[in-house]
Image 1 (cartoon, rainbow, N blue to C red):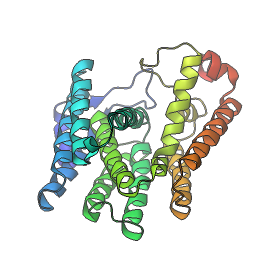
Image 2 (image 1 turned 180 degrees about the vertical axis):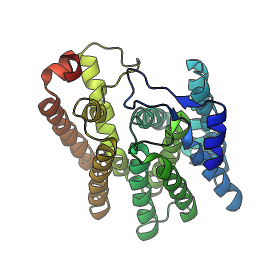
Image 3 (image 1 turned 90 degrees about the vertical axis):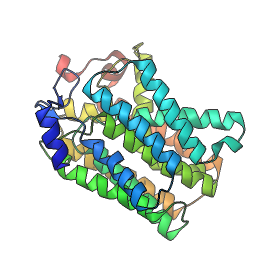
Amino acid sequence: MYLYLQIANRYNIIDEPNKRSSHAVYTIRGGGIIFPIGMLLEFIFSGYQYGWFIVGLMFISAISFLDDLKNQDLKLRFSIHLLAVSLLFYQLDFYVFPWYIVLMSLIFVIGGINAINFMDGINGITGSYSLITLLSLLYINIEYIQFINHMIIIATITAVLVFNFFNFRRIARCFAGDVGSVSIAFILLFFILKLITMTGNLNYILLLLVYGLDVVTTIFFRILRKENIFEAHRSHFYQFLVNEKSIPHLKVSFIYGAVQMAVNLCLILLPINKISYLALILTTTSMFFVAYRLFVQGKRSLLEGVHISDK
């Protein structure tokens, strides 16, 4: 990480604040490169386990890092993402399933990668949220069912802790960048899908519930406002808390991580394997979160796009 900071500083790999940013100072971008590097080192020292996953991770990390340096063509990025996910599915033996299962999984993974990328907008949120999810996965792997080698999760946790040392600060030394948010999304989704295929329990997607609620409800309200959902914005709830309510970055990051930890504890202590149970949780939490956002942000903000800073 120290070496990367020196290189990034020398070659001006910097995130410049703009009207969509939640930060006000120039900060080194791409610190999340530690995640694929950590996985590559683990791959070498573990005797080359999960090779197709690692190849996919290298592809998606490379195009994301190039995108951090200079905006890449959308079609190129999507093609590389598709290739990487295809390799991920090969690693997971997904192609034995019916085509519609593969298609739904593809939509879930591509959507999940983009969701986690969208949520990487304030200091500490990617590192703390990823750490909570990884620790939960490690506990499940040790205490309930070993769905993957312990060391690959531990290696990821180590990389996240290193990144947090530089990012979980009031003034961050570096940001994850697309290379960080996309690569950690790819890694987390690999672990979660491995767990789901091993147990047959779809409820484990709730390990990403809090991020999912923020992203999905934000898209919902943007559609109601007739906005282009593919255009850059800062309409997420965590951005509202930071930008409009002036709540410190680290406090918001801590809240998101703490709520997800509560969800994970319930998931671990009540391992119910029923689709109806999952549907009930997703429906009730979505309705609650929509109502909560309306109460906290107000109808004008969510339905008309009028913010405190606009007044």
